[in-house]
Length: 201
Image 1 (tube, rainbow, N blue to C red):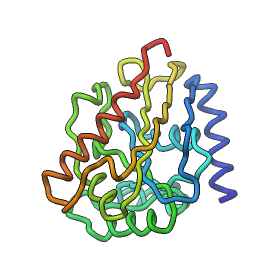
Image 2 (cartoon, rainbow, N blue to C red):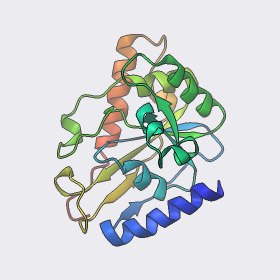
Image 3 (cartoon, helix red, strand yellow):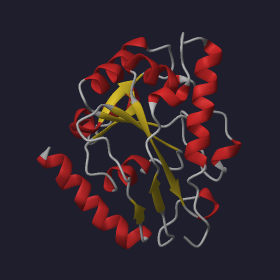
Image 4 (cartoon, rainbow, N blue to C red):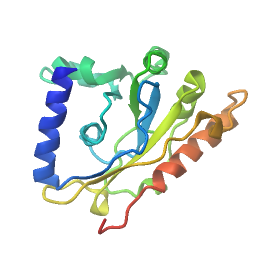
């Protein structure tokens, strides 16, 4: 946890200088309770932006290829849970569910991949977030990473907003059918998109 906080605060200070980062922190971080932290996905460093605004340690659902990068693999187990995006990786889903069940906050990007320069509300999302929420019966903290034109550039402000937690009961999942999961994922995504600030925020 010490190294996690060291990296988090070092990056937070650097990003404040480079990206003029502004945070609207969550009113309720669900401390001590397993949850999902779900956000739009604009850049490769979105996880670091989200880490900087939360007092909790957040483990991110990340592509398995990152564990093959010599420098990154030294830190990946501390910050992330691997997923193989080339196949239906059930083991990674179970790993996320176990992490949530053990009281961890797990970060997931419902878009599945980065969407640089694209308004999040115009993208298609995946059902994984609602499936994991259903299996864990957990709440969700919505978040939004925003910058002008949805493109990360140095010396351009990045605003990170956390919303009010979404209660599991509000997802209206009863049997876990495909339609229920689809509707729940769309509901979560709508709450994320509602957090978009004005351009001058």
